[in-house]
Length: 164
Ligand code: PNS
Image 1 (cartoon, helix red, strand yellow):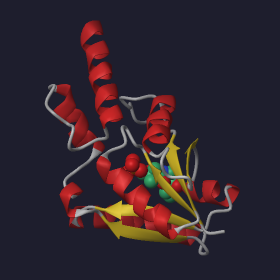
Image 2 (image 1 turned 30 degrees about the vertical axis):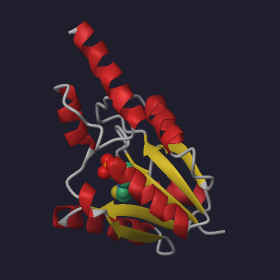
Image 3 (image 1 turned 45 degrees about the vertical axis):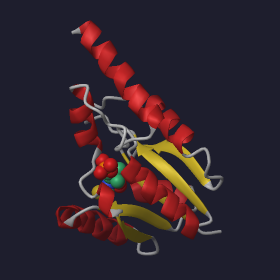
């Protein structure tokens, strides 16, 4: 069985991520979407919220699982008996960082391959940070994220505005 891991922060999942996950799920027998538990970042959504949103927006994909992980990505792949990492490339600006990560991961474990997919043109500018920036000012993000995520963003910023 060919298993791929699609890692990221997913704070929150966007239509760009979903496009990559869906396309990956057509190629691999199983895709595990793995949310990084990163104590250095201060995320908008908790790990549980991010995992739950991902589970809901991928519920139509029978061979996609959602999980969280900490530590090295390569160790997580070994634990899950996965052979590949899948990533989306949006623009040339992503290339250097992604090449660095793919090279390090290859150095750490040469049997694991990183597969890059060119992001659909319509999402080439899209990132979770951009989505948060737009949603913070109550602008329309319906073309950028699934409806459930749009609702979650509205709720989150309403809560934040109440407490500040
Ligand atoms: O969505 P992001 O924040 O760009 O995702 C980055 C991610 C999770 C893919 C990357 O930070 C990662 O793999 N972190 C785990 C630690 C690790 O294995 N780092 C690479 C080797 S040093």
